[in-house]
Length: 177
Image 1 (cartoon, helix red, strand yellow):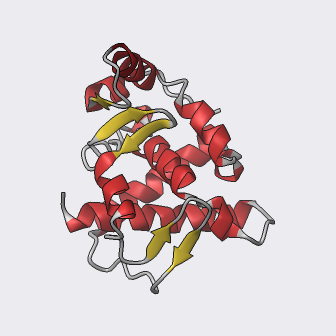
Image 2 (tube, helix red, strand yellow):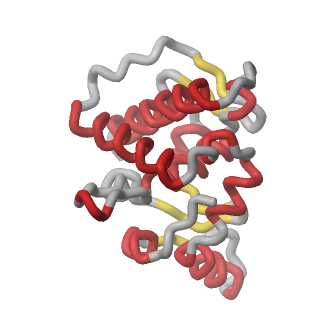
């Protein structure tokens, strides 16, 4: 896993927080971006693409998903969160804490643009998505066939998680509501 992957995740969260500030009048943004909500938003953002314009999704970068009880989890990012390998944010079960002023100058303009386009597309699919609680985001991700198939396999094998291939995610009918 590259440091760029973690940094791009933090950039995405930073931009999602901007969207939240634009959309929701609630003042306590920190409690909205829990670990669970952030991981669900990352999944939805990663799998989003504009087929009409030939945009690529972010699954080439965020490419290590497992189906777990509460939906798809990008395992590398989850590990970075748990082991505090993030630079600008700490992700708790109940809130996000900004621990440093974000600086994304190490990321290429192309990567940042890809995240920005993905967020624009998410907004067009569901303008309310950013205001949904973590449990509502979990319900949305549970609709994806890639998660349902992988979690079904995990249950059959008596495991708590199962790898989700990038192709299975790309081939799933996307849900954003």
